[in-house]
Length: 582
Image (cartoon, rainbow, N blue to C red; front, side):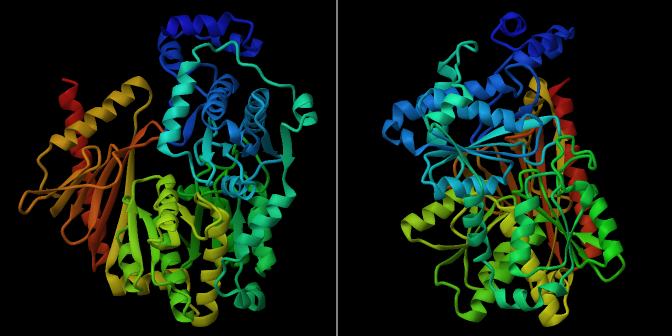
């Protein structure tokens, strides 16, 4: 099968000369197989892959085929909504603009209007634009925080959230139904513009989005009068956040914002970082230099499509401390709920939404203010879906949502994680505590830990590429399910939740109970006194992720416990792989 596809792609004139030449240079049969043994997987929110020729890579022909499937779905299931159109945005990655235009012109060929941003924009602004323009769907070309070799295609639906599973399954069916790779047509850009099937958008959407972002501040007067007291260093990491993050901060009154010049402008090579991911400490190396030179209080960085925010804080001990995604989430929950509680603006059904991979400390903090907590599967799409459910059922009033992988959201006008919103809120919180208590965010965290106990979190990912990697991930998950575990690192396990089987079990009495969340290949081992270990294969990257959380009163002791837990889990994984590969 893969040989036939390889022959087609390397010889058929439908494919550009450079694609055919690229393929003809490949001599390794394993590489040919990996590029063509399957189609790049269209998951729950779209697809992501290495930029190269092949059906299991991302390129303009894959973009065409996926968009053709989307168009066929719209024509057959939503014909009356065709003219509502599809909004398209893109980031700074290689071929992002070209891929966005390809998608727009495939839609135009099907007589479906495309609203295309005139330059790169943050992913959350795409979500906002879908809602603001009452469009039927949205597409953003991005691979988020992945290395430079990657790009991707994320699909959104009419509420501004990532496409729901039912629609995704139907769209995938249309993508697969069209077997040919060489007959998908595009309308010319000139014709699409002249006919109104391609509409360029930009500044007006920016203005409306920024006004909404600024409306989320809880102490705007303090920012207006004292914003200059907080010195901020900001890096867009060569991505799409540069203009809007800076405008939002400046217009509110944060007048002392220094931008990392070397990382200010779009650069698809991400030449100053090993990976454009604010979760990785080295992404802050340049920002720290700027901070030390200027005496900055706060360092912030956004990933290439500006939906993730990283934060580092001066710790008064001569260095900048990088906050984890969980710590940022807990700080923002505490700040938002405390300020609304103090002003009498906290609604009766105030609700926080977080993922099952995120710290249980967030649950404790939220409930201390009387807020409800909804835990959902890993992936921000599930947070957005729960927010929609709360609105429709009047079962809660959304206050904040977060996931440990640096994704945060407040407000009701975006349905995905939003680093522009998060940058404004974390800057406001830092200024508020500095102005009112002479506290840094580190000191605020210490106060929270003293009240609820110290939580230490960590992650470990095992990269397993290609077809064999998928098989090994399946082996690991099967082995963990079959393992008879009652403790990890000396900590007793209270319960095991298996989201693939949608059932959980209390170990003390062997009592089984159903899980309400959708089916997902996830295992979560919860400790008796707080904390957990969780395993899940990534849906967007060739890796299996392990999440670790331990709780106690002594930070130094917890560091040792964390080492023991991680070491034992990884030893179990290695044993599973060795056993299955005998």
